[in-house]
Image (cartoon, rainbow, N blue to C red; front, side, top):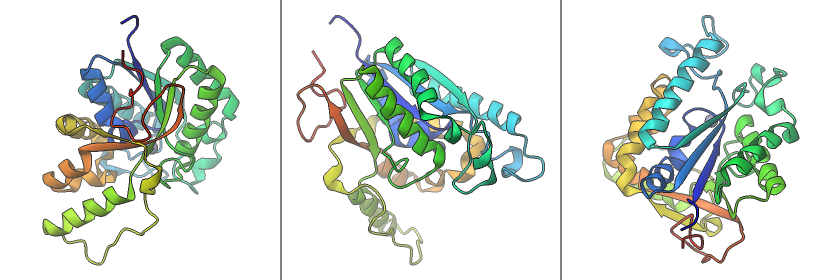
Length: 274
Ligand SMILES: [Zn+2]
């Protein structure tokens, strides 16, 4: 084989790499594929030490960013990711927060400006496959930084023309349903909680489901590396069997392919392997 296949995942904050792509990053690295993680912001608007919330007294943006970037490096090492690239933008905070108005917030950076930097990275690493969120920032999440990550990635994919395949992360509705059924059966007290029917990605849009069951342990370990945000990571509080069930597969929507690949595939690199 002439050159190493390369996967690039573009995420908004430190910790986002774990849930939707931790398994594929770990699996493809283990298979000898080169993996590149691009994290757009420093995560300044995460929780501070002792769970101090952004905007509260004692929340030190710079210290939170430093801690989260250290956690990110730990997660990258757990997953085995080959290259970490930080765009270094300022975390915009959740939709509606005062911090959305900060002139340097990632969401306020002109798309072309940030996309040009990402396109440069695509030209340097020549990823065959690029993964990021859909236009809602990932299955209806609407965090301004996730929406912006989508915008700049789509623009960079188009401008660079580098990747042969381009994907959005997905949480299939059927998988969400199965997870809640599983939790109920295993005795979890969910009260009357029922995921709404329009939560998650309609199954008919999902093109790609990758089995990452052997990497669940590693994915959990990477998630736990983001200890300072543990309170926000609801899956860390679930019983182990639920985590295993929820983490064993990762799903994607293929939005671009310059190679022949089946309509439904179990490999992001289908059609690209020698
Ligand atoms: Zn995020």
